[in-house]
Amino acid sequence: MSPNHWIILPVVMPAMMAAVMAMAMRHDVVLQRVFSLAATVALIAISAGLFISTLDGTIHTYQLGDWVPPFGIVLVLDRLSAMMLLLTSLLAAGVILYVAGSGWDTRGWHFHALFAFQVMGVNGAFLTGDAFNLFVFFEILLIASYGLMIHAGGGIRLRAGLQYVVMNLAGSTLFLFAMGTLYAVTGTLNMADMALRVRELDPGDQALLRTGAMILLIVFGIKAAAFPLQFWLPGTYSNAPAPVAAFFAIMTKVGAYAILRMYSLVFSPESAAIGTFFLDLLLPAGLLTLFFGAIGVLGAKQLPRLASFSVLASMGTLLIALSIGTQTGLTAALFYLLHSTFAAAALFLVLDLVADSQGPTIRAPGGLVAALFFAAAIAVAGMPPLSGFVGKLLILDASRDAPQMALIWSMILGTSLLVIVGFAMRGSRYFWKPLDPGFANPENLDPDGNPVAAHPIRSLAITASFVPFALLVLLTIAAGPVTAVLSDTAAQLLEPDRYIEAVLGPQSGEH
Image 1 (cartoon, rainbow, N blue to C red):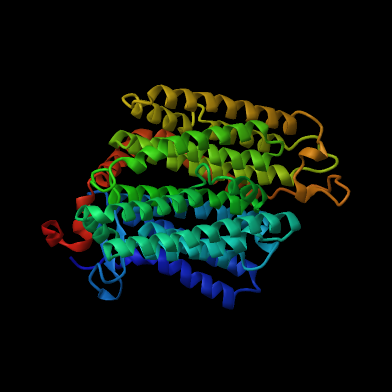
Image 2 (cartoon, rainbow, N blue to C red):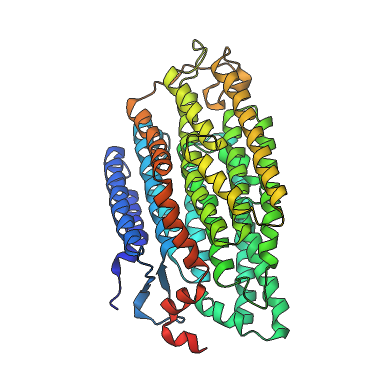
């Protein structure tokens, strides 16, 4: 089969655009906007084409430098990675449009270049078939996110960015330790080849393998903000620029993707050396992450922190779905992953509109902004009629035969009530009562703590904020066909031999 050169474009194109914008367009923000948006639209078209090419179940590979795996770097496009590419490109388009409409890219330097580098890192993490290159792409997206995190500056943002940097540097260090341990045991870092060697591992090496896999799970837990490694997320997301926080909605999903990929392929429950040990860890981690996220939503006094804790709660729900381990459980997890990404992005963009509408003469933001906040709250809490309700129903249905069914149902339903109450409390405080400086966005306060003049809300920014809402509505309307596609994706994940054969060739079955 001839190589599919389109596979590498989601990595190469953002990298090239980032370099061009940083060097040739750094003084022309309008030109940066045009090229950034055009590249993102092209990325949507490419991702959609790649996604369609996987609908027949084919797993495509791209061997960089024509080096045969496991000796060379390989990119792998299956149903899951194609879905994540399309999700990233759609989210990026909405954020770029909002940034251009709101003027956020004029509050600091090199926003579009950094954003393109982050898209490159995210896409690379989804496509790579090599564990070490997963580390490389993690570092690319994290370095770019450091710059985006402190975009527009400010002491509060710098302190939150420092915490974010330190936590992720610790995670990167552990990642290298894990890679060294796993390479010492298996002699390879190609995921497909590693999966084969794990199956053939000597009993004496199994303890060291489990140690490396445990370290790796800690690293991915940091990226996914899973309990007890979640404490960095609220401060980081609540203090990041709102459009950046909206795109950060995909960042925690990179951690969830890595868990799903590695622990369904390399460390699958069918492996005698691993069993269900790591799958069993996901349920308590998910339950506690969901609980603390919901409690944080209930106790948050500022809307950005409320939104950050809601992201934490959604990650807990996603981990619970992943822990079920069945095809229906994975289908529910993938559906909720799509929903929660768009819902979090919509919420952060709306909160930026809320912040821009705050001022000393304004008792509450405008009616349209209030309506958008109400819709975002419905989406995040998982209430009908939006897709969050469908996602949670799928998770509850998938857990009916699980031994912990009662615990899962009570936690998901109970925390949903807490999230609804939290949003109702904070929403009423912002939209129904006079503006209190204690509840205002710190960026809209003067040194004495008094609200400054409100920023004018631009029509393009409001239009852009509708993008994630439109995607949520589309996901709700097409829930049936989408679920069917995701069910096929889950089935493919539960058949790791197909992935291994696509990467290493038919002869891999003889190992």
